[in-house]
Amino acid sequence: MNIEPADLRLAKVLAALADPARLLAVRALAEQGESPCTGLQQAAGLDISRSTFSHHQRVLREAGVIRVRVDGSRRMLSLRRAELDSCFPGLLDSVLNTAPELLGAR
Image (tube, rainbow, N blue to C red; front, side, top):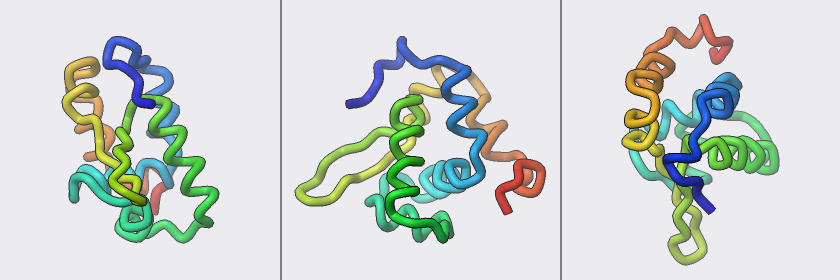
């Protein structure tokens, strides 16, 4: 279930983006577009368990940062850039353009 754009809340979005692993996943999605879950974990360079990555996906989805689409047996993830940019202009670009070392990401 994806949340509606009108239900996006800045505090939830910022909290979801504050975690280094989630931020890396969002950066990978921003660069490559839609991705299967397993491909995103690899693209983001995350060396975490599958269950931990599932938790991060859930937090991002519940905050409205990503969208999940079922394609057969695969779950495809995509960034909700248009909705985020509409509700919070410039926020996503600012976060994604911040140097990783300042965010504790790498």
